[in-house]
Amino acid sequence: MKKIALYPGTFDPITNGHFDIIERALKLFDEVIIAVAESHEKKPMFSLQDRIEMVEKSTKKLNNISVVGFDNLTVELAKTHGATILIRGLRALSDFEYELQLGYLNNSLDDSIETVYLMPKLKHAFISSSSVRSLLKFKAKTEHLIPSEVQKIIGSKERCM
Image 1 (cartoon, rainbow, N blue to C red):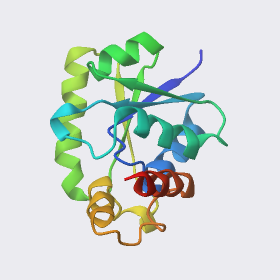
Image 2 (image 1 turned 90 degrees about the vertical axis):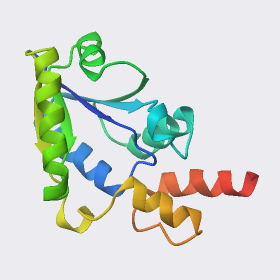
Image 3 (image 1 turned 60 degrees about the vertical axis):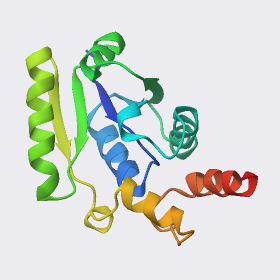
């Protein structure tokens, strides 16, 4: 039976840390679906379509990846795609409590869904989308934090502004 994992997140924007988690997940599962959340409550910097494009372009060289946008419960999306595993990233101890509660919540909604927590390599552990967004607001250097394809997309959008 094929093991399908769903990696949900806002990916505003996708970072090298996210990419590292995706590569690690591909070693464990037959297919990884990257689910980009609309996430109105977080007021993303980039539109859902822009974030989907960033994820698609940065993962295009990887096999067994698909990218979807969503605006419903993660467990419902997982069931729709036949995923029984949710991937969540842990960078620091501060992430753990929130992610643990979220994992328990998802399992309470559908006990056939398991959450697997993956840590990025240490060199990516400090990277967060919010820190990248802060740097982007000040037009600071971000090339070392995000995939080059994402940097190109952001650069082209800045030129259009």
